[in-house]
Length: 459
Image (cartoon, rainbow, N blue to C red; front, side, top):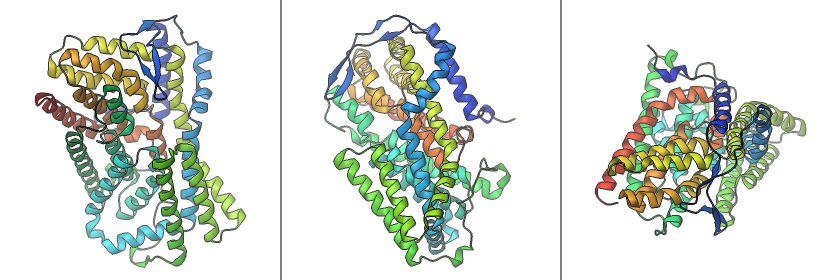
């Protein structure tokens, strides 16, 4: 008998069901808001300021109107999906990525394919830890090419890249959006307590690597059990035997342009505060430069661009569709209500139960407030004082928050970055959930064990 998560409906159906649920909740839950004050350019919640406001139920017309509004709100993420797709499409047309991956696999040898999977899982995980989330979107298709070259599938590619980056970013000891914001709110030294978070992140990435290798061995032994069957692999597969690959001058030029572009992106992110729109611009510049050095005509570049947009369009649609939920929450004014009542439920619980329950409450809130920094600003001003009342240190409260937010990012259908990255390796959300759900439970259990240990030792 198949497990329940194998019966997960299609991603569009699932998201539309959540849209309907949120709409109904605006009739069931009272509207409410916390007072917010501007601190260091950000709106911060004032503790104990929650108050109910006039109800704002969503009509049928408003529910469907929220869909185009969701696309408008997510326009920057939608476009970076398209820009990333265009860039990779031009690079794929030049054969540079295929030549680079084919040469890499030839030199390392197929007998080391499981080691390659482990190494790549940690590489992508470290990118999540140190660089961020959406900033790495352009690298996802490379995992797809490597996975297929090794004999894996696109689901394995998503595990190597999306899974590892999400775990690394979500549990990063130096995550500026969750830990950094939390430490500012809690008035703790920035990124203090990094030792325990580093241990947790390292073990979680090791579990992700093991899970990827186990899945790889499973589909190698019996390809029929793979979740990637029927997915569009066009443009990701190698067209020649491994032994025939080598890097020519054009391939080196294209790969060099790509790496220089990524370095420029990172420099801009860390020194000038660049975000999605600037990265999209760099991706387009990389695409044009790669097309020029590959001596592609204007017609070839134009046709390749449109073909790439067609392939990226389903993922771009899903990003906008998922953002509809955020729009409905804001219009119905029930996000703060959910946060308030979940925090109320924690009062009176035993110490260890309160720590785990605080983490669980963030798992629920993450569905409705998928932004890490937005969730921190909305909930931690409430959770930190509550944690102190319950006997938790501020550091433990922030760790509980990070676990609830970070681990559930792996299965959060309202997180635009997750949907965008999955679209880059053409993996539907429903198949991703079937693949990733067991490791989510495992990492959550691990995280709660570490959290309880931290509480025990006064972390």
